[in-house]
Amino acid sequence: MNTEPERMKQASSSDIKHVTVVGCGTMGNGIAQVFATCGYPVELVDLSAPALDKAMSTIARNLDRVVAKGGLDQNARDVALTRIHCSTSLAEATQKADLVVEAATENRQIKLELFRQLDQLSPAHCILATNTSSISITDIAGATTRPTQVIGMHFMNPVPVMKLVEIIKGYNTDPLVTATIVEMSHRLGKIPVEANDYPGFVANRILMPMINEAIHALYEGVAGVAEIDIVMKLGMAHPMGPLQLADFIGLDVCLAILKVLHDGFGQPKYAPCPLLVKMVSSGNLGVKTGKGFYAYQEGSKDLVVAPEFR
Ligand code: NAD
Image 1 (cartoon, helix red, strand yellow):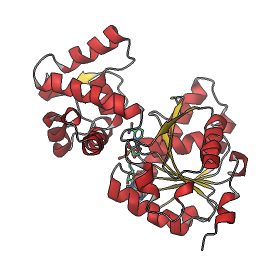
Image 2 (cartoon, rainbow, N blue to C red):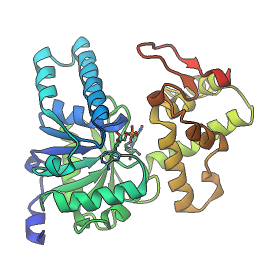
Image 3 (cartoon, rainbow, N blue to C red):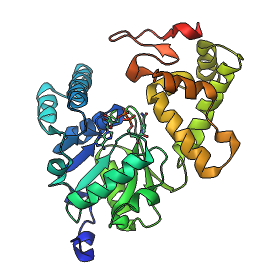
Image 4 (cartoon, helix red, strand yellow):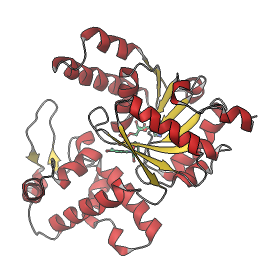
């Protein structure tokens, strides 16, 4: 049984020695890579063994790129890889955890069930962080008996490259836990920004309506895929157009976030564009499935509009 004094021992990021990352998809593998590169042993856990194999090859490939650019030497790359241990057992992967970062599918029921299990399995002092893009931290924390130790640690995609970590305080998050996660983000070479717990927090409350509007513009025939993206790149100095970014994030993730915004605020302006809904139902989810607004080929850097939008 967890006791309060035991829980409160966790007050500094230097007490965090073992990290568990739950979910090894687009975000989870990047989060594992960043912790491992910074010297932390990482347990990377997923339901799917093939997904774990794919995640390890992605991490190895990404680290190779860092080595080629002179950001890491070969030995540091090899050591970082050996720090990551993969598992399909949540019980095994959380035994020694001081910090869990959950990066599983953006689905409220999945996260509530995961946090109920994480609360039972992980040591009493362990901080339970979620990388959710939009789901209420307070709600997730309510699935545990340690709501003071639950926090949002929202990394950006691609995790090894992007500097920002949005730190979301749940209604009951202990300020010491927030301070620990802020400090940990700095240790990872990131820049943390604190936000309060409202649907979509800051990042996705602003980003997703823009992406949804870009999809509406395409749906209504205002302009084509490439044209919409070029307007936003050249006209607004965005590094990537909103449709390419949606593909990169994952169209299923975009749809899930818009639904959270729509349900949470009850305003029609957040209603997902029917085209986005249809694309997700069809299984065209963007980069991760090889097709979204653009078509992707392994190893090719060319940006080719998907056939149905040409
Ligand atoms: P993804 O679909 O690429 O990967 C999710 C992974 O979670 C899959 O490998 C799946 O097998 C695994 N999973 C599902 N249920 C699980 C469980 N019970 N236990 C263990 N593993 C489980 O998703 P993603 O894009 O990596 O998103 C993960 C989280 O990060 C979501 O909450 C998402 O909102 C958030 N996020 C995504 C982005 C982005 O750009 N994709 C950016 C910031 C935050």
